Length: 387
Image 1 (cartoon, one colour):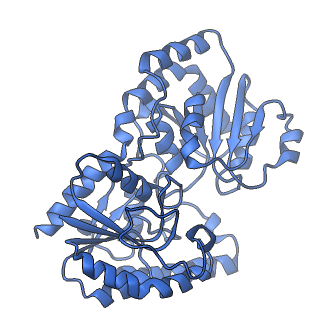
Image 2: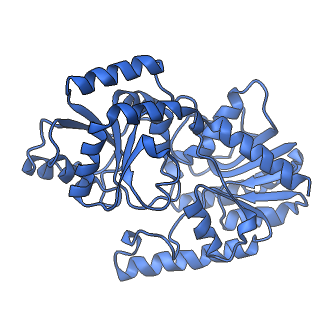
Image 3: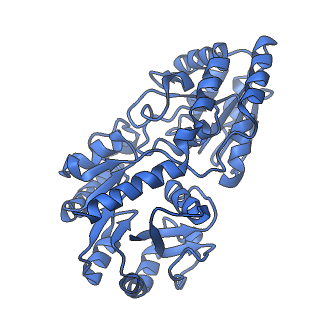
């Protein structure tokens, strides 16, 4: 069984853009025996490798530079003919489009493919049933997102006879609200690359956690992601002010809000870092006692939650759809709203139960390996290919 993965962007490194997809590919590449044959076809790339069926022209620049710019569409046009010819030469059994957009629909029509087709899981944006209202901050932004939704809805309607994969049940509900049949949507298991794993044996980690708990050492918190309102960065800082005996490391881009940190008298308790390459994140997760994720709305999990749990590190996060589907309850402490008081209470609860939380997280790290997702995809490919 031969699969053609079609994506707007590919990177041979384990980077965060389309991170879950890249984790599948990198894991497949490292397996001695894969459950299916595969090739990757991409419109843009950064750091190509032999996994690519052919290399994009790069007439308008590197894929990293083109990301989210208008030039990326020009690169799509420049590579359209090449992509169609390469997919035809591969003659796959299944086409798996990682995204859905105008280019993917044109490509599907151009190659006149009579096999099975899958779209997703990277189908995002605003949907009417999203919990988060920050997407619609003002009239102009609201009109923009609603227009994009109508366009996306037409793309989905045009491909509704095909199969789709979603990041979560919450994400599947978004796709279903556009008119897709529930029977055509598969929710993927949350696997990431094996670089996300505990860096020591279970007993060694638990012994150290028990010692720190017994001696009431300072709890080490970790925040990973953009320092933005959407991700809950400000309320996280305000929550820290309300909790004793904790310190936090903050990783990611954006405004660190140093004035707010000073006004809350947190200079000695918050370590502000910039962007950290994804390949270095495992050591950050393994060095933390708890990862705090105060974002309010994520279709994909988010990745940070899954990466942390894959390392055996407990998580404190918002109790909303799309965020509360992935973890055993004994590995996570949820807070009901993004109020500083609620986050502070959740952090204190995590501190009081850190041994049990860590033990449960370590017991369940196997659930978050990309091989689990790959086996699920292989079953789906076999099922639709036999129809």
